[in-house]
Length: 167
Length: 167
DNA sequence: TTTCATGCAAAATGTTTGCACACGA
DNA sequence: TCGTGTGCAAACATTTTGCATGAAA
Image (cartoon, rainbow over all chains, first blue to last red; front, top):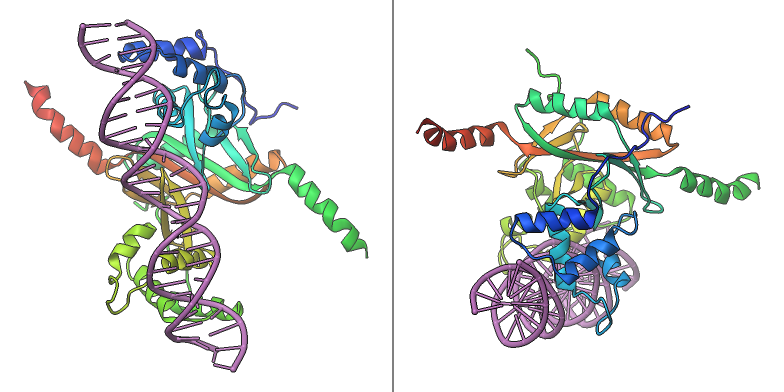
């Protein structure tokens, strides 16, 4: 049985590096070494990440490929502006995820293990637009995060409890 | 014509002050002057607010009714814990809203004027639960924020443009 | 060769904490 | 009285900024 909420993918003609290059050019900004390094690193994995995690993964000061903290923050903002990344506020943490070559989606957030599960729902968009039009509100986007406990964490909680229950 | 998405209200037998008093007592915590001052202030208006705005509205140091910054933060957390307030992360800002005597609802967020419009949708909850059950995810709550431009801001943008359009 | 971007350090922001004293139960 | 709550200041975590230097176009 096919999962109704599963994610597909989106056709893109350019890689992130080229896409960002185009964006920079169109704005008269420079395609610099630090920017290329960051795009490289960011689009080599698919996980959600925050600024600090990214910085930790980069070479440290005085090493080949080092990028300063300030530049990381500045570049992340540009990547969001360029539509390559999506930024979201998750209970205190600010996390980023790929938004280029990826379909629009929403999240289930497990508050036990902090995992993010993605899903798609066309109905959600229909609902959103109905509410908005009802209020004469012009929609530019949305954020829908369902919080709770993922399957694995529910299981592991049950495992912990079982011995006690049997006593 | 009745608005399908409008908010009703919820019957509550106790006022916020009494309700928080009960909560404190049930936990062996003390019903102190600063706590009463904060509950009073917070539940005298209905706007969404952040910690800083609240602090500004309070009497300043050496004045009658002053409450320290630390106590404000500590008490806000207690009020959330007690179910009197809801806390949400809105593009960097952390805002609070009343959650006692108020129905569950979601928001349209105008990114021009920062206004929050509340709405209710039972279908959203049905959709949420369907997605979650599909992933064997145990839901504890959700956050749905639709961003865009509110009716007034759309109008004022049009007003600004009209003279130009006519030339 | 002229901007624009970077690295650095300092500053700003928002929130939390340790501790001595004050106060509610 | 006893233990919790408060105010204060310092610590903290995260992000932003000013400025001199360095590197794209």
